Structure formats: C-alpha cells, structure tokens
Length: 292
Image (cartoon, rainbow, N blue to C red; front, side):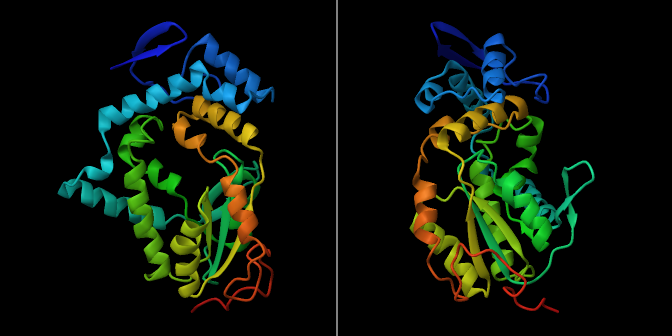
C-alpha cells in the first residue's frame, strides 16, 4: 500500500479491482469524472496545468503501486518465466493483420504478405496512431503490427491488473520486442510486411535501431507522422488511462514535446535504400514480388 499526498489530502493507493471503462473509471471519484468529462468534451487542459493536476498524480501513484508490487518483471529469471516468454513471443507472432469489421472495429485475423515493406508510424503517445494509420494501413498492406503494447497485454501482471502494471512489465516487453524484431530481420518472418508504431524522439536511434537494420534485411522503409498537437495528446493520454486502466507514467509522456515531430521533419525528405523519400506512401509498384 502506498500513501498518496495531493491537494492537501492523503490516502492509501491500492490499485483498482475492476476493468475500467467510460462508465467506471480506474479512479472512482467525482474529481476524476470531472476531468474525464472535460477532456471528452474537448475542453482540454493546458500541458502545464495537466502536468501538475491531482488526477495525473493519482494515476502515477497507481502505476508506482503496481511497480512496487511486481517489481521490474524483466528481472524474473526462473525457468517458468523463460517458458512464459517463449509462449508470449509465439502468440504475438501468430497475430494476423488488421481487418475492418462491419461494426467499424478491427479484428487481427487477416493475412500477412511478404513484400518486404516496413511503415514506421510516428507520433506522440495517444496521438491517434492506431486509428489514423496503424490499423487501416495494416489492412491495406496485409501487414503485421509490430507493437510493444500488444506484448505487454499478453503478460500476466498486465492482464490481472487490467493494464495497471504496464510500467512494471515495460522493460520486459522491450526485451521481447527485440526478440520479435529479430524474427523479421533474420528469422522465419523475414520479409513480412510490418507496421511499426513508435514515438521516436531520437533521430539517430530511429536510424540505427530500426531503419538501417531493416534496409539491410531488404526492406523498403517508409514513414508517416500523426501530427496531433502535444496538448491534445496529453489530454487524451489521461483520458485513456482513466477509462482503460493502461498506465503511462506522466514523466515519460510529458518528456517528448516536439522531438518526435522534429525527427520526422528531418527524416521525411531523405532518400531511402530504394531511392524513394521516406515520406513517400507505399504504392502498387513499391514492393518486391511476394516471396515464395
């Protein structure tokens, strides 16, 4: 149990025991409901106001509670955990491309093609990457979505806390993400079309960790940017935590600022390994023939 101090009050933080939703927020108070209602009505808080808001501090306290409860799960090194990780990677890599349903939602049961296409979808947290690009482009390109957040969702601590333990499993999910990534660079999934959503605040890291290795493996790499203002993203990030329970530490969320956009602006007119601008959309003649 943690003791939270904010707005001249203190109380115990013990997490939440229900699946959060728009009807039952992960913080079940009038204050949280007021913040949530204001955001969904698009009466957005200023960034600095939100940084210092009591509800944001409570969300951080919940995340810290689960981090102290579970620790850093990447440090669990038992045979059982290693077996779990193998199962998680196998399950993750078996997911299909996004397919739009009559309801307008997406199911991840579609085919994946092997045309050596990689699309980086860049933008701030809660910028709308999945809605605007990731899911529809996965559907159009028959592409696998290489998303670290999906790996988190497969880990037991995340599942049993309805997303509250997202920070506790974060480093472990990054390790598993690297293993999955290697399967597309060197392993049995090499050549599979990929959509990779990422914040990318550092240009050199984006080039050296993702672009160069995938181009060396034969991929045609392109990039798009979801240009949602920081103020809106930070508000939607709080809204998403409240109604989904998926925690995202505020010190991380507020640290990116304009850097992801600056990275994209620097990247967009550079010519890729195929002689195309990184910002040029994929077209009918942009890919290799599908591998046998």
